Image 1 (cartoon, rainbow, N blue to C red):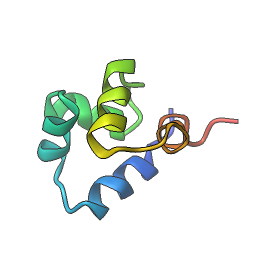
Image 2: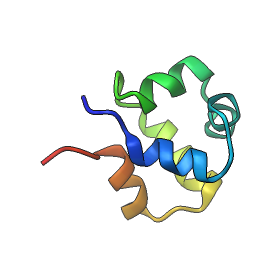
Image 3: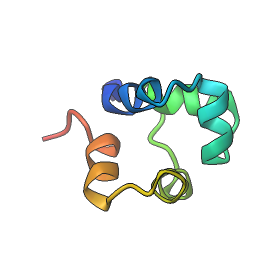
Length: 70
């Protein structure tokens, strides 16, 4: 899997560290780190929490979730 740079850029643009972002997405920091690094896909619940917490469009979440895939 590729790193999710758009997810990281989004987090940094909000001036949040991984711990703070993880808390907002209702996962632990280790899980969040693995998602951001592309080591794990992340659950549907994680992506829904991200969308809801930050009032993101489905398209924006899709871009972050499937970045680098053809």
